[in-house]
Image (tube, rainbow, N blue to C red):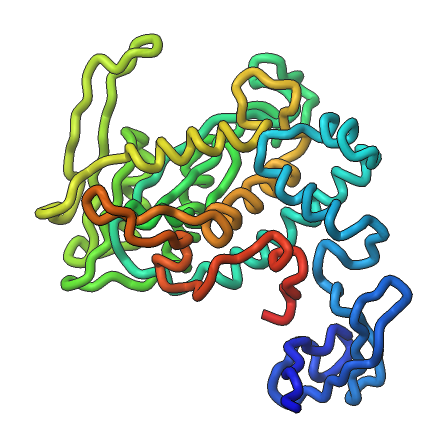
Length: 335
């Protein structure tokens, strides 16, 4: 009989083989009273269970109910609504939302690496923390008020790249573009990166600092808006050559709208607004992971659907469609 290999690594931070795959000596050691697989490390003599470093760790809530909460976190359902639907306390639901966000952040950071160069659209989406900017008092925390989330998307695959939330300043934009620079493969003259944004001037200088004109191109769309109407639209190339490619932000704007439809705190007039920047980012992290690794995208050849793959599979960084159960049980520290 073939024995299934043990994927777990030691979770004891004081062990010399903490999170080390090479040289580990881990064995299964029955199950605890909650039914979770227990492991033993021969190096440090410590026991730990399979849910360590997951949202399920030390949770007495049924796993099926936790999975329902995870799915609901990206379906525009407020905490008060979940309280009425599940009977769980609002504090418990809030704690799980925080754990989902932390877990999704670890998984996103560990998996979103070596993204191939290509067409990338960038935009900003508005929301607010605790109260709107016009209602702020001088003594309110600096993170309260208007909050802009800088988003980036691979156009052809719909893969969400890392996002950054904060005030609409050059510093926030700089953090965002440096995140993209770290997770994307370096472009070359024969394999360029093409960036498209709106008329926000913050992008120009930072992109010029990060990329050579021989390996990347940057263009923007400057819109003249009055009320809810676009009066004029000007497309300009800032640097590089867009021959054979188009300057557009329509795809990322569509996905930003999807974010507004799926996360309650992004609705313009809502009672489910984020109470802190931490909880705000937690919701975005879960949404990005779900979009990239769980939700399938239809691929078409003309009018014929040829296959369904997740954006992560299209980008070549995932081999299968993830499930919410897999998301909850994946030991982030062992990746």
